Image 1 (cartoon, rainbow, N blue to C red):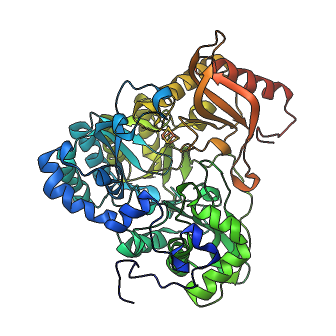
Image 2 (image 1 turned 135 degrees about the vertical axis):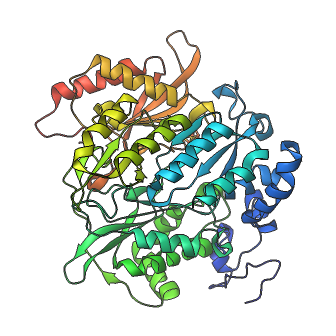
Image 3 (image 1 turned 45 degrees about the vertical axis):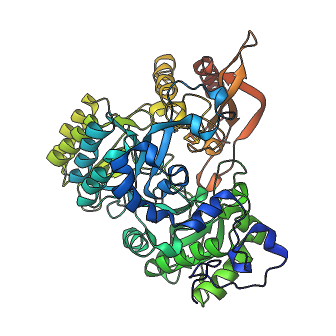
Length: 554
Ligand code: SF4
């Protein structure tokens, strides 16, 4: 079908415009943009902004950037303007975007499957030190995030990243984002199936592909063949979870429609088993449904989870099979309950080849360029040069000979990177927060780090797995709703009636086969200053009252 000014070249309307016209779905022939975001995406593909960055903006500076590129299309290459320093959380909702914009950027490096080499990590560390004032956070989607990036430096940063096989392509924006993968893919003794070839093929076919670069919203995905359920598959738009089919052997159980933020929804199973070599086709079908049938009228209803909730899993599977795959999928089993309580692979573990992997924890994903460079040196001296990032803001060094383990652990611990961390360091995550995020209401990273230190000091004997997820606003980037203790940043009143930074508390959320959302504790808000006292009280009460074997979430 030829492209017309009103219709994307790759989409043929499948239905007559009618009842669903108001949702702005392309598949029912509705190609007229219904909001500013849809308009700028139609005006020019976000991927095209790269040329303007390289040829115009990086040479003429921040003020030369077109506003639709600055607050829109630059995301397609992993760039967001960061928050101007000194603007308090009370102003977040009332200031205009340009009043919040600093002239520096956050830049996200996508690390599909969390796979890194020491060479790549060294380059990430060097860029951090040279261009990002030393910043480099590990995110809960296996990425690395820089701050303080100047537009003038972006082409050189891309050149260095791409030279070692890394990129920022579609790290943000209404695009297929980083593909999460098991951090122990290909090496874990208990692995059901290694999803790495599928991740590589999805990257090759779909990332940076203009046929899929104008989605209704972001599209998050995960592929893991680990029985530890280690990629938070329940909160992705599409996820492939390793299972053993009684007749066909190892493959993947297909989940769709997960997502947090406001209106959180857990993904649902379609009851379909997908063999490894068909994962990219099925990914293509699901992303195609999202592009064509996804709701484009309101951004607050545009994630795939809303379409899945309206259709239900049966209809979703039928459309996937009939209109996209042109064949039926094989029915398959659900994943089994994992045996361990943690999903993060921290500590020292034997690989299937007899060597070891060593997982370690900074505090709330906060590292820096100098530390990353030292981690690369340590990994190079003790392993084969392979590392992984996790979906819990942690890292792993692979392929360590038994005789080298002790020295590696000592080297990591000397840098305050704990291989056997307290449950608090292990289970606490924090989003970017007010330090750099324009949507934030409260501070998160430093708050999370000091909370860990306080809890370690106050209750050193606590030995239960616990997750504490600290978020700077309702957007849930650090998964408020699925933590034992989920904290949503907002302004609250202190005992003197003053408005101060604080959190709405959610208790008892979980991932895994017991997945569920934490209950908002009615009226329970704590100020940031009261947070350590509050969390200590909750944990001590749980410790006193729990029945044998009871988890916090139950
Ligand atoms: Fe920013 Fe809110 Fe996401 Fe935190 S949860 S990174 S404050 S948008």
